[in-house]
Length: 575
Image (cartoon, rainbow, N blue to C red; front, side, top):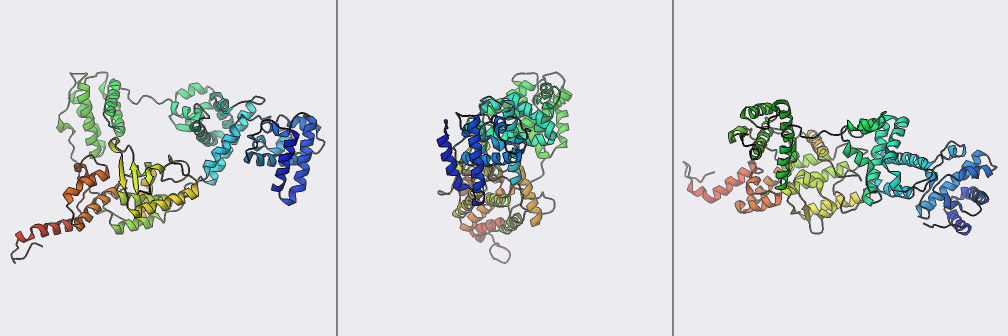
């Protein structure tokens, strides 16, 4: 952007703008711009109107020298606004304050004086480019929210050359929230602060902001999310009210430090222990209710906890009791008087689990049902993304979460290789895919890039829109809806098909193909185990459910190998 302006440069840009105007408006716009600039030079003899694109401080004096009616003045400012917008899009000027005001109220004296913080308008314009895949209503709301915030900070700092960093200080953000609650109520302000939060995160990622004020509010006061923060900031004593939103410590019993130490020790050993943290929190809450202040764990106390776990499923109960036994082993190192229950204490009888194995016919019915899902305005690419997701799981057997965490640079379609990073047990692996799967992913990638305009290597490969990767919970919900539409039912007494059953189906189909090809299945199992990302072949055996087709192939293999040794009463080989 030019930093010094004179009348000559101003006229050059006006002349360059004229061909962009529709012929029917050309004379009127030419007249408006000529009169506006001439009058401006009378008021400010040494300056150019292009030196004031970031503020409305000049408007009042310009109006005092203007003898035209307020309506004509508004038309002249509207023509000036369109010219400045054209210059802004070309990068000639970095601000256009008239984008943030109402021209009619400005000429009538109903607008406050605004001075844009340096660089804020350009940053908003760059952020808007990333909204290409969002619904129109979402784009409108975000644009409106950023306009409201810009008007607020520009009015607050009128006459000062403020930068982006100063515009987003804590006092400005909190003051804007209180102002918006008065204007739009709590519900409207929640939507506005959420939109502003996306913008501050974008500025932090770019390096324009050293800290994210919205993100810090959410991290410091996480209870109840944005509604709680907005309500607290609108209270008479906002800082005192915000303290009630601070999340209490997860562990609060007398063994809180010991439990936290156990978690840290396990994580240093390479375990994620994400779900285990919630189970330990459940044990900690039990100790607060039942355990008193004693750090000694007794058999009677642990038996009471085991009884309290009967409300959960048998598999969850076994995992939870096994975890508590491991904690007791850790705790006894520091508290020798504490007991460690024997192994039988954590044993729970679990009914045998039978996954649903999708046959090719079942899967075709599933895809047909998925393609009939109603389109969602906020997620216009949902059906295409969901169908691609299902095909990827069925064809590769990767875990549902692994597919959603794939980023663009993890998908090498030229080589036909997927890179699965930092998955279960903190392991990464390479997953080769067939040419058919690679072509499927290539078609999806081309359509996604065309509709969303996103090709950043760090962006998730599977997306509903331009904001983030798909959510596993949403995918499981869509899967259950699709199963109901396809009318795919499990045998009586078994649980309905799950998303994870596609992984079981892949393992069984792979085993079946090896039998049909005459391969040595026992020697092939380590390859399947590595492909699936298992730590050992024992883990893979869980996925090898005996189906009618698999048993038929196994019987045929056995009959070929040893059928001549087994004779029935008729002297024929074993059938």
